[in-house]
Length: 488
Ligand SMILES: O=C(COP(=O)(O)O)[C@H](O)[C@H](O)COP(=O)(O)O
Ligand SMILES: [Mg+2]
Image 1 (tube, rainbow, N blue to C red):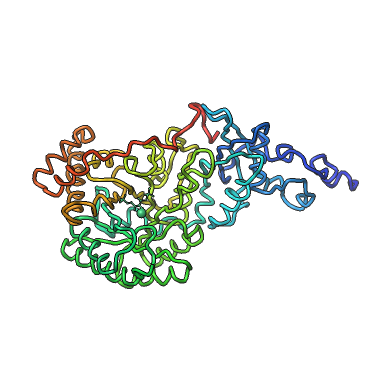
Image 2 (cartoon, rainbow, N blue to C red):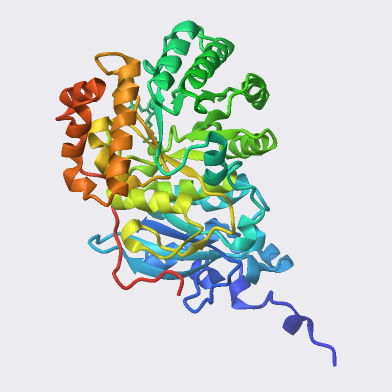
């Protein structure tokens, strides 16, 4: 028997009456939703406007970051709208805050184009952050399903192959940022590179804002820089590198600089986060094709990652950058001059280095994550660190990290080589102490003083920087409900 028109279509259904109905009623809230292995999950910290119901707020976020607009549209009926609608499935009050909630949202995998961070982010951090009904919004964490991760390249080289290419194992790598950041000529720049590498560092690096300015065009820097690398490597009998920053105003310029970097024999090049997700993915593909290690400076991230109630947590940037395919990313020092709570930083490092992570609320990891065999990405600790902190750095950050001392190398009173030597000796004596099973964290200062007896540069550095610490309260710390398990 044929159905009447009215019973065949959904159009007479209350859900599709024209007008404005709550997002929760439109299907963007489903407390009974059963998460699929293939779903993309996101957790937002939301601060609804006064009087806005948290569940409706979560539903609105799910709506605006997936299929919805502000009013009912009948064209939904032309789509698999029940499937494509994101579902907010859980809302928890943030402990200790009266106006904030954690909202969990599940997204159908087919909402996203394969291998495109640009497409993912246009939904997840798109319009939704400007929503008037939400006073503030912060993307705290995401779970990326294996099926989706497999559409991304992942780190071009990865930690294991980087160590093999460098032939350096069992210790953190050592680097330094050339200072002053801006203004040196190519020749003087190359001298800094040479001195630092000759003194014992593995890497020197360009700073985030050095590209191709009038005082030193990029080719000058690359040519003098590689001369410094080659001379120091020949003298030391070790592989050495300098991260040449290929960041530029256009992709064409970046490719040209990266090609030249390869041509002159560099093992590594560098880009800044500010070039954008698509440009980063393109450069990562170029890096894998050309057997180049790709360093990423996170310049710009604090603009949106530092404050607790609005923007996004840096751990999500870590996830996206591992997907995008960079081999290094600045991820905090704990003890240095820039933002970094110890537990949060540990969570970032685990996100970059582990093949699987469990829910770990203390470290701010709200979801379990399987990395689908994407390579590991090397965290870089940089910003206001010096050799007197070596025991703390090794304790907090482990072996798979590049420790970068800019001021802490170039600022040494006896010169750059002496600064580099102080760092290398401090590192090696601490690694030996740790490997011998000593309580190197407690005995650290004494271990350094003993090593300094036969290393003048280390003695001078310890004397100069002995009292330098950066003990400010972190702005980004963990908030969690003891019993919460996000992957229910
Ligand atoms: O130039 C430096 C550090 O110089 P120095 O070693 O002289 O302090 C880097 O740009 C910062 O580390 C970036 O910060 P982060 O690594 O936190 O992104
Ligand atoms: Mg810098």
